[in-house]
Length: 287
Image 1 (cartoon, rainbow, N blue to C red):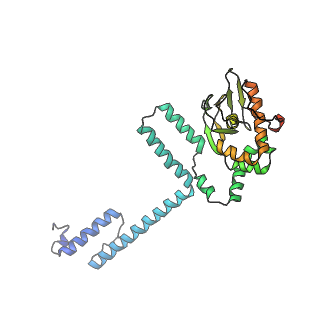
Image 2: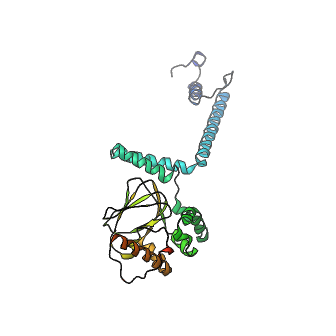
Image 3: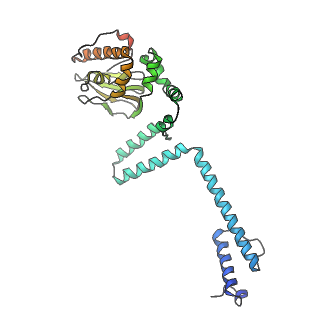
């Protein structure tokens, strides 16, 4: 082998390679050995062993510190990882800039920088705990909606456990006239416009609901609904709607009464076999 420095020229290849390995490790690990370099082979190998142990401990410390920092806000990290995938998806499909901006704003309003697997979390809890959490999360919706405020608490809980949270951006058509209705919506926060054939426009805001006519009549949408602001809504599917109202027939009649009044205002045919109840039972309900 090529001699590294004069004192090792006449030594065995084992000593030469040991000193070469020692120098390489010293530079690679950036760990010094003090003022006095090791001289004997035992010193060289012990010094290398101590450097390896020191580098391992340092790497473990950095790794544990990084994991600890990440675990302090795992939901934000999960959101960032998810949004990176979304950015890569938008780049791969070469989406236009305005569409990318709308997607970015949607994620910001929908998740607000944090992402949870809420369905899985709630699914692991007992029913009493699940109902307690859902009632707490939807407390503002219940407080602002007279339908829930004046109803049987068991009905309210049954409805809330089946609601799904959704976000719509300004200008989005939540409902289009003439389509088959599969959901109704409750407004937690935001303003929407109800657009009918006669170009009549009605504004709805927090505490109102819409879209239940199709679920009752099994027909098509009688009006369009457009989001005027960012809207935070809760949707209820037709299957869940019928499932809950089968247990609470009085609430079905109340929904039917408001739906008939709405159909009268827009000039649609009233569904047969329904009884009229005072509209005061459901204040705040609009098409």
